[in-house]
Image (tube, rainbow, N blue to C red):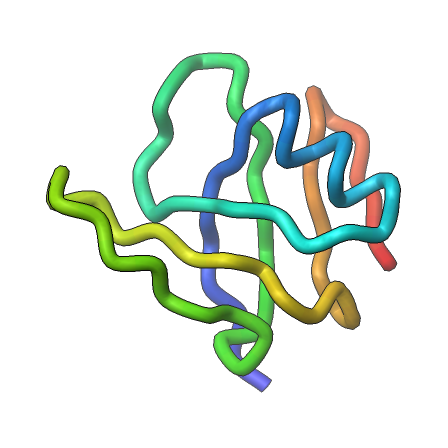
Length: 74
């Protein structure tokens, strides 16, 4: 199971903590973003026109989110 590295904002992190789907992108949007490690099969690509690859993390199994040195996983 190959994992990809993505980034999400505070709102995405809060959705993750609540056990809900959240969006993540391949590019860091701010220095406060959280790092997401997710299996490729847990992602659904979102088509945006800004050139950044974005995904909906639709299955939280085996997903980890790193927040300021703390690792959270489901």
